[in-house]
Image (cartoon, rainbow, N blue to C red; front, side, top):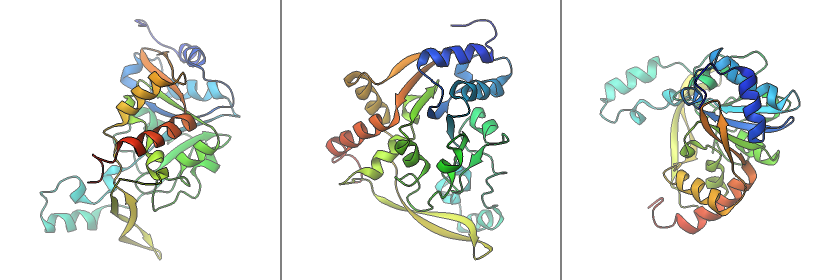
Length: 267
C-alpha cells in the first residue's frame, strides 16, 4: 500500500503493469476512495487513464441517471399526489448538464471534460473519450438500453477491455450485455417510465427493457477468474484492480446464465 501521495505518473505506471496499453478501448468502473490519496484528485486518475491508452485508445465510463426514473422506483410508499407532483417538476435528461447517480466522483468529473461524448439514453448513458468515443456513444437505443446495439455492444465489437479500478466485482455493467444475448432469457420484461422530449414537448412516456439482475455478478466473476487465465489482478494506487477482456467475459457469462439462471431468475 502506498502511504505517501499518489501521482498521475504513479497511476500510469500501475496501469501499464496491469496490462493497459496504447490503443486499447476500456470501460472503467472505479472507486476513488479505494485508489488512495491521489495528488490532483479524480482529475489525475482520469488523465492517467487517458495517457495510458493514448489518443488512439478510448476510455468509457457509465454515467447512469437513476434519479430520473419514475419516483415510485425509489419510494413505493409515495402517495399518488406526491408522485404526480415530482413527475411534473422533474427535468428531462440533458447529456451536458445532468449529473450521474451513484457512479462515483471519477465518472462525474470525466463526463464534464472537454472532448468527452455522452450518450443520449435518459437513464443508462455512457461517456467516452478518445478515438472511438463518438462511435461508442452515438445512436444509443432507448429500448433495451444495454443490448448489442448499445455502447456495451460496441465495446464488445471493438474487442475492448473492462477495468475494475477498486470497484466491487458485482459492479461490472458489461455482464448485463450477456443477459440480452441469452437465447433463452429468464429475465422478466420491464417497462420503464421516463420524461423526455416527445414531438418537441417534455412528456412522460415509456420504453421497453428487461428487469436486469446483478445478484450473481460476483459469483460469475469469481468463477470466470478461476476457470480462465483472462483476469489480470494488480494494484492501481491503493486500489485492488482487475483487467478483463470484455468479449471473453461476456461470452463466458452468457453460457453461465443459460446454465444457471433457470431456477432463480424471472420466476
